[in-house]
Image 1 (cartoon, rainbow, N blue to C red):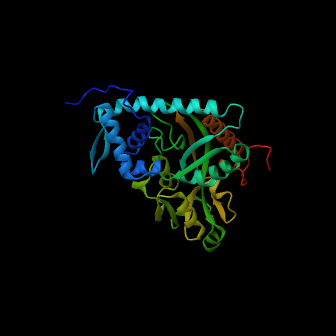
Image 2: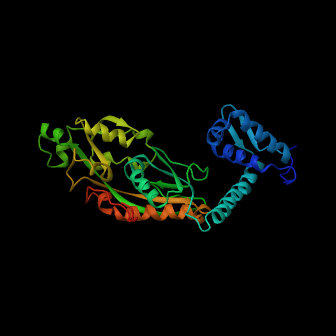
Image 3: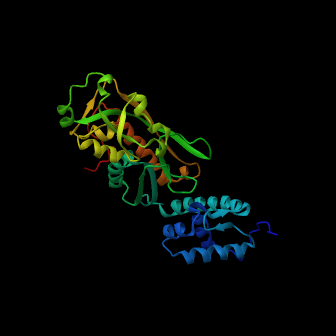
Length: 320
């Protein structure tokens, strides 16, 4: 019979807790090994050592399901997660006293916004905060804040539950775009009805990670999509080949003079991005600094995000 979780601090190796956390978050010893920069056997050995020290089973292990937390593992996770945040906060307070703000921040984002907007903005961020290291994860799927895949997330939808802090980062618009060469080869497009014979690049409906991405049929009823991808960047490059139309975010397409808006007064999709992080992490100075910078960057670029301008603006930093 499994014992109740009792912490014997004389037997506990605190370094083992880091391994426990990563396995709990990735649910795979191999995934934890990659994140920790060690091999699989080291992770497995550390987890076994922690279980032996606590006298309880922390994971149910299987080849198909990976490492699933037991009830005792779930209890321990809450404690250890809190300890990690407390240590980070204490380290930040001590290390940054009288010195430039430092530390590591991982930002997760939707693919297009991450590559076309956040990447250049966060590169400029380090002009002012060179000691804060940034990991940017621009991916065509959701990132998990609870598993610490990211410290800050930019998402299409607000968090529905959990201990998160969130705010609307910005509104943005998408419009229908085509190359000038494409438009020159076809009859003038003067109304939505004129779009019926045209081909579109779009998302794969059943693989789109958010309902918010399925806007083509609503914006252009009856649209024929003959080229589809899970990636908005792939759609962008497909449109640049001059073989199809595509609905693209203005922050991507408006910066490219090769793309022209089609029926800009009629086909406009409006969406929003939300900024979120775990409630406990929001107190860290480096998180707050990145958070505030992203909000300032979005506010400075309202025209670009809403399709009313074509140039990116920069947050005033005092550095050219």
